[in-house]
Length: 369
Image (cartoon, rainbow, N blue to C red):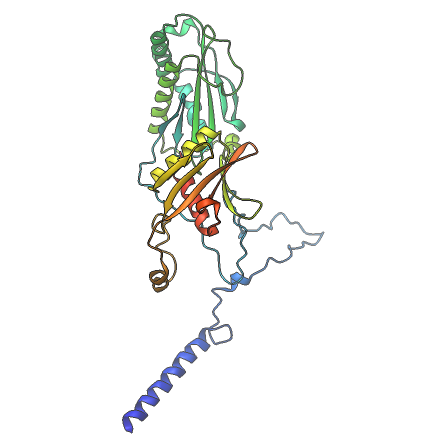
């Protein structure tokens, strides 16, 4: 009897302590817990300043930033904060690379365009090549014409041009270079496109970026030299304010379709978009089982491990409900206005969970080049 009474007293005290602790830290206890008050917070009316006072000293020092343009989520969270977009790590070195697709090549630089733009200009200045025309807001520049008087120059630009001309057996004409710096597919990356023109080989094109260089060997030499220069100065983070507009011209954006499904909008031509999707899936180690280029469909297998979901949620819940098996998905390309929309579905176009589709699209964008 004494043991039973003692156990009863212990249990009663424990329940009181548990209840008391909860009472002490709830919204009505001694110590009010306000850690989740912001979930239900609502924006109030703007502060009104009397007419006889100045509003210059008043500013919103804790403004809520807008959603980034890459986010296409439209979900409303009433009782809990939304999870951030998935972040996928890439093991490969984030250096300057020469990318090639068919006859096209470009530099991929792991910095924002407004950081790369001043470096490109400095490259020509360091090599004594003047700039005849530039449009920082569009990331385009054209050098001055380099004539026969420049034949004795020993900088890398003139040497690259002479080497390419000799290989192509071009002995006459003037030379100039066109460069366009664009936003990369991933955030905080830039693409640098180079075109070489010789007025004895072809009538000079005045567009910002011609389809091809007049001598491909010269373009290759110039791309290599410019890439080496950018790689040696990759630590410099100086920003050009006049070129800030380049970073807003995104080539990839997570959007929502008319039926509120996630999609990745790619401002690319079909060949590059198709190659990018296949390359990104391969680099992310997503197994590709089949492809249908005509229909624009890539058949793949995904799992929670690939989508980086193993670290989310309550441990026991994950252990009980986690699907360890791979499941088939279809990555589909659809022609849209001036772009292509990439969506993810199940076999035969069946709908899958929006979060799963969104994570795979984000994975594709992160591994895209």
